[in-house]
Image 1 (cartoon, one colour):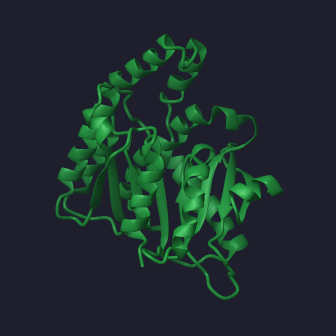
Image 2 (cartoon, helix red, strand yellow):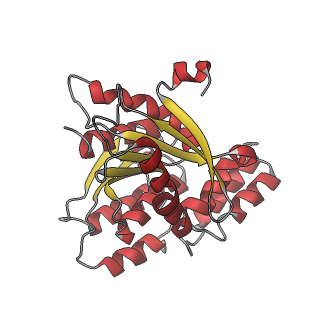
Length: 282
């Protein structure tokens, strides 16, 4: 990484990795202060939407040295898109982070149409965005994280054998919920920020029914934002309402939650910090 970027993202390496399915990913690896794998090996916290999230979340690695509330040491691995795909990360994430067969909620389509009317996106961009939602592969992306990326991180950075975490926000939060419900054993804790469960017919509810009374081993922490619930955008109102429904169905199973005083856009960093404080405090 260049000297300029080191000033912003200290102790951060960057590399690119092509998945077995032929997709190119950018990976930022941020080491904790003074990290030396020869003496102490730490677990990994994977953060999704790296192209957007790395600048807001990687600097929080200094919380591991906070004298007022220390966070257990971790190595942050932020996963995004590389090459030409990097400029299209906002739509490619739909392919990777949304569970297979997830319905496209009408409120979501309406929000995209609003984006066209307000000039936030062109019709061509909107069509490409929605097209990625018609064939979604969170299952394949989960396999990439666990079977392709994680072994490389273990090999190159000498990480601990257990204690790993996963954090995602919005559709990344939807992916986090999906991962938790699959019972994947790699992660000890999972943070789901404002998970994109927009429709009542979401695959998440079908997975909850299948879960029954059992509880996945990983600790789950879920956050929503008050401005989502109290604002006037139907897509965010539904997201917050459905997140609350998920929490109600998981009452008594050790799932933690928080309501943050943020909008959907500003809530990413606050949600990540809430996850750290709840799931990774000393």
